[in-house]
Structures are given as C-alpha cells and as structure tokens.
Length: 212
Ligand code: ADP
Ligand code: MG
Image: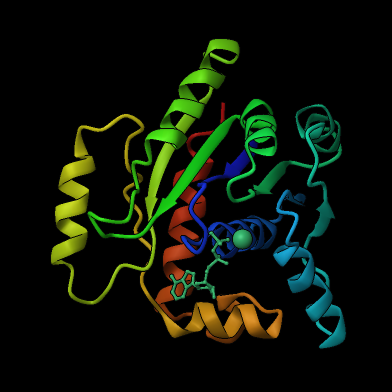
C-alpha cells in the first residue's frame, strides 16, 4: 500500500505522522520505504540525525521531491510492503503527483475550526485525482489534540459526516513527538509503553485495515 500524508498547510504533522507510521509498520515486521516529497527534506534530516546519533536503521528514507513521483513510487513499492509519502506544502505539481501515486491519502489536521482542516484547495485536488483514480481513498486525521477535548470533539462532530471521513484514532499534543523529531527518534524509542506509542500503534492498525 502507498499512503501519502498530504496537506498544503505546513505544521499539521505530515512529517511526524509519516515517520511514525513507517516506524510502526517496521516494528510489525513490514518492509517500509518512506519517500520524502518535501523539498525541505525534514524526513531526510531526521534519518541523517539517526545516523549521527548511532541509532539503528529502521526503514529507508528516499528524497523524491519531483513531479515524477507517481511513476517512481510504484517502482519502489514493488520491493517493500508499504510506501509512506511525506508530502510537500503548497507545491501543486508535487501534490498532484503524490495524489496519483497514493492508494490512501491521509490529511492531518489540527483540532481548530479555524485551521482550514477542510482546505477547499486540498479537497479539490483529491476530487481532481479521483477523475483518474476513482479508487483513491482519503481520510482526515486529527493531530495535536489537547487534554481539553472540547474543541477536538467539536471538530470531530463537524467532520463526522464529512467526505473524506475522519480516522477514529486521534493523535495527542505530546512533548514526546517534538523530542523524537529533534533527536532522530520515534516516540516508542523514548517511551515504549507511553500514550504516544500506543496511539501510533492504533493508527498503524487502523490504516493497515484500509489496505486495498
Ligand atoms: P508538517 O510536516 O505538516 O509541516 P511536522 O510534522 O513537521 O508538520 O510538525 C510541525 C511541528 O509540530 C514539529 O516541530 C513537530 O515536532 C510538532 N508536532 C507535530 N505533531 C505533534 C504532536 N502530536 N504533538 C506535539 N508536537 C507535534
Ligand atoms: Mg513536513
């Protein structure tokens, strides 16, 4: 399965969640390649940071921030079980290419009604891709949910009957994610049984069930 984390908005968690999904699947014994489709190369930076810290390799990270992604990703997918794409912000050509490559698009969004989670532009691009790929699946994913869940609940209610639908798994606002990003780690390498590790495991199971 090729899963792409896409949202034109930056800072919603595309990189964080792509790395963690790839890591969770790796822990389940799957072979995974992560494609960094963001010209900023945050996933590549993370993987270089791991090497500097002397941490073991979990999965391959390939930089492919170009419009030929939709032709190259299926090639890469042939040699592994899953490909995870960490998407670009606001680069229309790259975004389209990622949409054509993906079996499933996950749109991370933060639980604020003002945050443009349902960015009209993003939804239009998904609809456009479905002209060529009617089987393309898309899901929203709430990230950075606070302990005060009222806004999250309101957002979830707003999204309840929405297309694309919302994944049941929510990701909390947790220091562990920021720590992980800075140290080239994943949350389960910081606290194997902590809440972050548990929600990522749940996310991997839920997304795994959406495999075509
Ligand atoms: P994007 O790739 O969409 O731009 P990132 O994954 O880089 O977003 O996340 C932006 C920033 O927010 C990063 O510093 C990251 O560590 C932090 N972050 C993302 N998700 C969470 C979370 N659930 N809890 C805490 N910090 C988070
Ligand atoms: Mg990013």
